[in-house]
Image (tube, rainbow, N blue to C red; front, side, top):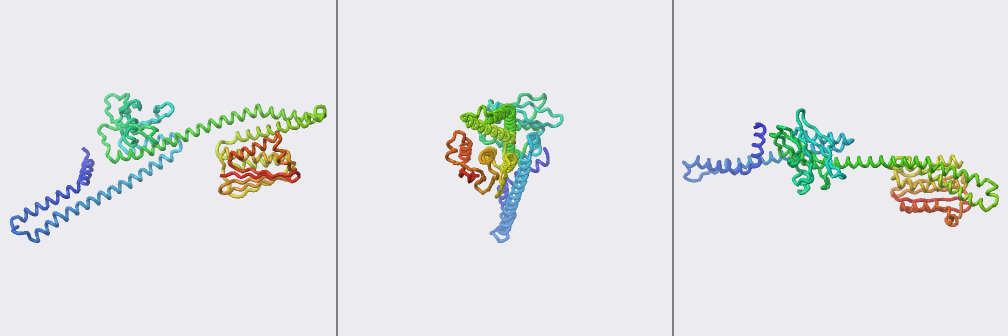
Length: 448
């Protein structure tokens, strides 16, 4: 047996039985002093009493106290060392940048905590309800046995962990499928569960003479929930990236379809209606002219909506830089319509979610588009105020203005209705003030 192991076992035994050893020392010292003074002990003298107090009481108590202090200091040192190791392990696990790096770290960690000769990481697939090989490691010259996780087997480590509601334990593996010839390795499983649900399984291979200490078992048990959380977090990130990639590809496919089919058709429809509205043979009668103009307006509005939708689809999914998107639209619209645009901003701007940003952007775009298309404005003022609990936007122009009630009653005023619907969906407030020859002012409050 290893001499260092003998010393460690002896030290642990003395610490564990220290007070029984103290009592034994007291009895031994008392008996020794009594036998020593027995020939001259006609009566109890002060010298005998002093030696009994000194060697049978004080000295054993001092030894017991020193052993207790040593045990406390040793426990404190072990706790500090254990916490420091856990902190390092937690930092390593959380610092993994991708899945391959995390698998490498998880295969390396057990080697630093226990004398293993090989290990295998299996990851649970919730869809197929099976474990899949994520990575493995073994010492040179060592052929690891083929091990599977068999949830149908009642002695499987996964079932044992669920029954005992404890994922922080090593279990002897009962799922050996193939063992190399003349091999006699100890195989243990460390189930990694998160919220009582399987995440992964670490299978550890030991030499037959290897004997794990309680410290090593505790360290492996302590890192199990941290490894489970790291695997679960990175799997969720991978899933989110895959979903985002699929959504991005679908957005691009829809954008290409709109650009290649619907957008050219709407542009052609708008062009032909515009030509018809200027044809005296068609519009000269006076009855068709307003209807053609109305149809031309609807076609133009649909074409603008498709262009805006294409711009939105081509943006990356995620947080929307509202001010940048608004500035780009304002500059393009102002240059095309030939009016002056003033954009003022107060407060600290914030990135809005994709859905909220697009809805607010639609309302603001519609107000600017109406100023360019209907109001014949030469100047548009936009005020954006970022407050701690809301976003306030005001769009005003010096255009012709209109009778709000009359316009809302028209069949072609669905743009105003959509603006109000978006404001209601955002749980915001929309206010529009306009009078003929007095311009139009739109005010929007959106809670953040």
